[in-house]
Length: 452
Image 1 (cartoon, rainbow, N blue to C red):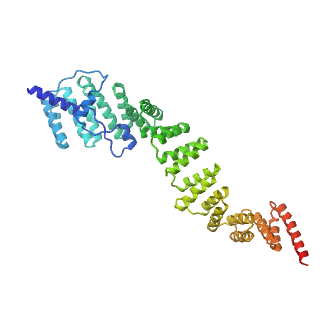
Image 2 (cartoon, helix red, strand yellow):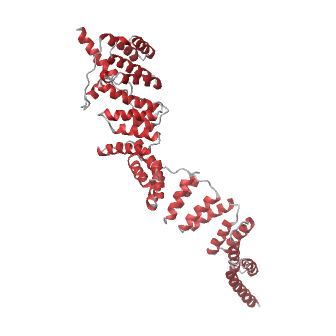
Image 3 (cartoon, helix red, strand yellow):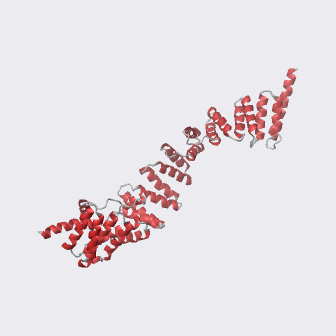
């Protein structure tokens, strides 16, 4: 009867101590790595572990020494303390057993060291846990159940990962890959992360591609972080076509604003202008464009694709919401969009506002030309004078021609001739100015004759 009771207890204890720990990574580790490790809580329930053991396995079995009652009682004492989260008590019980370890067989010692590792792991003393899990392996195959050996290899890989010793993490992962029959997409993703950390991007890419393809073949959506690693490695290799392909999946399955924006940038690199425009518009509608540079680029894209009014709406909204600074340059851009859209009445107020903010007279000079075209000669002259007052005009010769024509339209011939003669001093406008001078002088003479 006693033996039967002990056997039941041993089964329960074995479930808790021989299964490799799923690693709970430290807070410093990134979420991407956390997902790749397949995190779950320590001390999984016996029921969950039993279900895991019922899964079909191709692993060979191995005959090991039996656990005797004396060892069982020592480990049970440590287990009771661990269940109560009395980690100091658990360690004390294990140290007491360790002091007399010569009394125990290899399997019992392996379970003891495994339990040491469990306690240090559970209290986040990962570096202290590592040597004990190594001691488990040091007991030799003849003393280790296959599941314990395989699980310990994976636990060591995870612990080295969390302590940022990625070379050792890869070492133990590679050992685990050789003996495990439970290699999953998550396993490849974890090793991919480790290879990436040591700068071996070729192997990182190979592993993460396997992980993604395993999920896709099963009709499952790969994890966001896996796509993220693919995207990163392809980008480092300047393979923008592949980057775009990964981002298209991210947009489809994880539609975050940043992915729309990044994909638009990739389309730009690939000269896929229409796709870039559509994706930027999607990013804009998704709220991904918040910075003034992004919003202005959106406006320029619309303007470049012969949709200037859409561009004007984006820029005007950005200025209104104070996401785009109300500077002379930005107001001028808005006015340009309105002009391209044949919305001159909306363009003029923006140009006037831009002109006031500018320290140069160029915008007033442009306004003078616009008002001349609208046959608003007084305003043309007014804007021209403001331009001259501010100075720093790139083509002052053209402004003088505009003012000459506006004055001529108002029959202010002397003022017109003064402006046109100034324009004729510049070789770029000399011929045009002389033609206008001849015309104005003729009109002046004709008017004088009519007055006699």
